[in-house]
Length: 285
Image: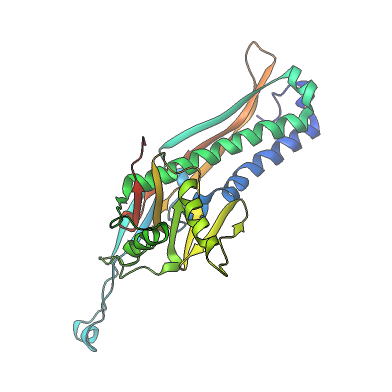
């Protein structure tokens, strides 16, 4: 059926149809623009979310061989990659019922914008919560040495990730490392930085605060699990594919209300758990 076919009289017609289509289109784009998790998550995924899973690959280190090794063997080194499968198994819905009398108060445009705005903010919070919860679940707890100052503690945490060496990495460049802090810890670090003479401080970018500390990106987030002070992770450490499906508006049976909204299908999984550390003890996950 057409998207607007079942809507009540005041929501029928070109105005209602165009407005609803416009707001549906805005939601997921705005979510992607507003969330910190979108900036940090792994974007190098293969496969289609509609299939139920997507896949990220971690390529193992390659070492140089003596010149002529490949010629003697008749082949070069095989590329080794370990797949990380992310299941799209987390389904939620954002549906609203619109009463005919409410349309009379707010009008088509005002009411649709109000409801879809609520849907958007709900999805944003859900994605942020689940992204950072997965980082803590998959990561390794970090305890600083002794009782350092805030700047020394964060530096030690950064170096812990930076120095990581295993089958996949030989150390991590600082410009790939992110420190996501609770508001309290971010405030402590910022106050320290701002107290230093001629300091550039920590600036602001778009919809969240961002700065750098010793060439590492630093963020403040209200969505860290309660009890967690900070998470240190590399770019792309967690994957979170998302797709949405619109719910064609329909009249609610035996009422003067119409329901509309969308469904969100997603999965959240750490791709590089060895490059995630956190400080604190989560109250619940």
